[in-house]
Image (cartoon, rainbow, N blue to C red; front, side, top):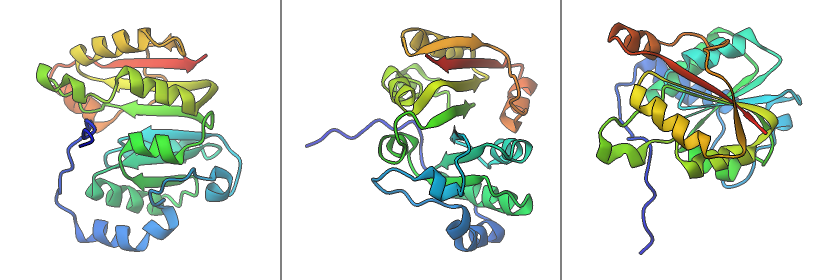
Amino acid sequence: MPQRPIRSFVRRAGRMTPGQRRALDELWPTYGIDYQEQPIDFARCFGNTNPVALEIGFGDGALLVEMAARDPGINFLGVEVHEPGIGHCLLEIQSHELANVRVICHDATEVLKDQIHDASLSAVNLFFPDPWPKKRHHKRRIIQGGFLQLLASKLKSGGRLHIATDWSDYAEHIQDIAGKEDAFMLAGTGRGERPRSKFESRGMALGHSIFDFQYVRK
């Protein structure tokens, strides 16, 4: 019997508002990309050949939408598994009349393997992933050696990987794992142009420090 893959997330049903449900029903055909085991043609999907930035686990889409609105010359692709957050994001995309955002509802690892061409991404953003704080759950953290190797294969040379967390233990884990990957070089530890998120504000209110790591694909 094949071994089940370790997931870095737990699907939570969540409470979906009527507006979010309507967004999933009506706006998905415009802004959504169905998961399938074949690579996405970005030029056809977005209607241009602009650089593509991927955000993994975008939550309610607040940062994804803000970054896309701020930089219309970049195409933004978001991956999330929680439908209420996706519904909220779709409403925000429509409200801001953005043409440079698309979203996928699926496991990011499978999306990367099956739907993203090698050396096709200009940036990958991973903001405040689940820290899985209990030691027995550390194997569920998305930042692992194999995952970083997968990201490296999808990023263009010179492409950027930006990871942020408010858990000091996870920050040490990120530094340790990324430091072993020859494909990446640490370029900075500041927030840069990343907008402040509600998770960041919540963490700061609890007295957590914020850790940003910006890597460049060699």
